[in-house]
Picture 1 (spheres, rainbow, N blue to C red):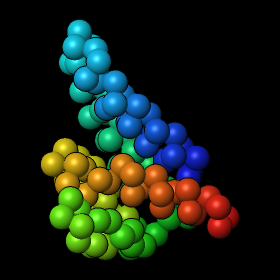
Picture 2: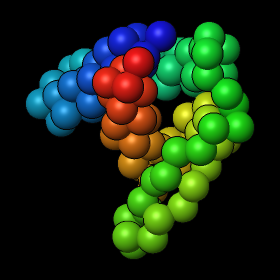
Picture 3: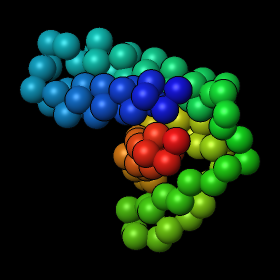
Length: 103
Protein backbone atom coordinates (compact mmCIF):
# COMPACT_ATOMS: atom_id res chain seq x y z
CA UNK A 1 0.00 0.00 0.00
CA UNK A 2 2.77 2.45 0.91
CA UNK A 3 4.50 1.81 -2.42
CA UNK A 4 1.27 2.77 -4.21
CA UNK A 5 0.99 5.98 -2.19
CA UNK A 6 4.61 6.89 -2.98
CA UNK A 7 4.07 6.20 -6.69
CA UNK A 8 0.87 8.27 -6.77
CA UNK A 9 2.59 11.19 -5.03
CA UNK A 10 5.50 11.04 -7.48
CA UNK A 11 3.11 10.95 -10.43
CA UNK A 12 1.08 13.90 -9.15
CA UNK A 13 4.24 15.97 -8.62
CA UNK A 14 5.58 15.12 -12.09
CA UNK A 15 2.34 15.99 -13.89
CA UNK A 16 2.01 19.19 -11.88
CA UNK A 17 5.62 20.13 -12.63
CA UNK A 18 5.15 19.53 -16.36
CA UNK A 19 1.78 21.30 -16.51
CA UNK A 20 3.48 24.62 -17.22
CA UNK A 21 5.42 23.20 -20.18
CA UNK A 22 2.53 21.72 -22.12
CA UNK A 23 -0.38 24.11 -22.66
CA UNK A 24 -2.04 21.83 -25.20
CA UNK A 25 -2.17 19.11 -22.53
CA UNK A 26 -3.37 21.40 -19.73
CA UNK A 27 -6.99 20.19 -19.65
CA UNK A 28 -5.91 16.56 -19.67
CA UNK A 29 -3.29 17.21 -17.00
CA UNK A 30 -5.73 19.00 -14.69
CA UNK A 31 -8.23 16.16 -15.04
CA UNK A 32 -5.44 13.66 -14.37
CA UNK A 33 -4.43 15.56 -11.22
CA UNK A 34 -8.01 15.60 -9.92
CA UNK A 35 -8.41 11.88 -10.57
CA UNK A 36 -5.00 11.05 -9.10
CA UNK A 37 -5.79 12.97 -5.90
CA UNK A 38 -9.15 11.21 -5.68
CA UNK A 39 -7.42 7.84 -6.12
CA UNK A 40 -4.82 8.74 -3.50
CA UNK A 41 -7.62 9.70 -1.13
CA UNK A 42 -9.29 6.31 -1.66
CA UNK A 43 -6.01 4.47 -1.09
CA UNK A 44 -5.51 6.29 2.22
CA UNK A 45 -9.11 5.87 3.35
CA UNK A 46 -9.24 2.16 2.54
CA UNK A 47 -5.61 1.20 3.06
CA UNK A 48 -4.96 -2.03 4.87
CA UNK A 49 -3.09 -1.60 8.11
CA UNK A 50 -3.68 2.15 8.21
CA UNK A 51 -5.60 3.74 11.03
CA UNK A 52 -7.72 6.66 9.87
CA UNK A 53 -7.03 8.26 13.26
CA UNK A 54 -3.24 8.14 12.77
CA UNK A 55 -1.86 11.65 12.51
CA UNK A 56 0.40 13.31 9.95
CA UNK A 57 2.12 16.56 10.80
CA UNK A 58 1.90 19.11 8.01
CA UNK A 59 3.34 22.59 7.70
CA UNK A 60 1.33 25.28 5.94
CA UNK A 61 2.75 28.05 3.77
CA UNK A 62 3.16 30.30 6.80
CA UNK A 63 5.35 27.67 8.45
CA UNK A 64 2.82 26.66 11.10
CA UNK A 65 2.82 22.95 11.92
CA UNK A 66 -0.55 21.24 12.30
CA UNK A 67 -1.53 17.62 12.74
CA UNK A 68 -4.30 15.99 10.75
CA UNK A 69 -5.55 12.43 10.88
CA UNK A 70 -5.20 10.19 7.83
CA UNK A 71 -8.99 10.40 7.50
CA UNK A 72 -8.87 14.19 7.42
CA UNK A 73 -6.03 14.18 4.92
CA UNK A 74 -7.97 11.77 2.70
CA UNK A 75 -10.90 14.19 2.72
CA UNK A 76 -8.68 17.22 2.12
CA UNK A 77 -7.26 15.62 -1.03
CA UNK A 78 -10.48 16.61 -2.81
CA UNK A 79 -9.82 20.31 -2.16
CA UNK A 80 -7.10 21.82 -4.38
CA UNK A 81 -6.68 24.82 -2.04
CA UNK A 82 -5.94 22.58 0.93
CA UNK A 83 -3.59 20.41 -1.13
CA UNK A 84 -1.57 23.51 -1.99
CA UNK A 85 -1.90 25.29 1.37
CA UNK A 86 -0.67 22.30 3.35
CA UNK A 87 1.60 20.82 0.67
CA UNK A 88 -0.29 17.58 1.24
CA UNK A 89 1.28 15.53 -1.53
CA UNK A 90 4.78 15.97 -0.13
CA UNK A 91 3.65 15.30 3.44
CA UNK A 92 1.72 12.17 2.45
CA UNK A 93 4.77 11.01 0.47
CA UNK A 94 7.07 11.55 3.48
CA UNK A 95 4.61 9.72 5.73
CA UNK A 96 4.41 6.73 3.37
CA UNK A 97 8.20 6.58 2.98
CA UNK A 98 8.68 6.60 6.77
CA UNK A 99 6.09 3.82 7.16
CA UNK A 100 7.74 1.76 4.43
CA UNK A 101 11.17 2.25 6.01
CA UNK A 102 9.88 1.14 9.43
CA UNK A 103 7.97 -1.87 8.08
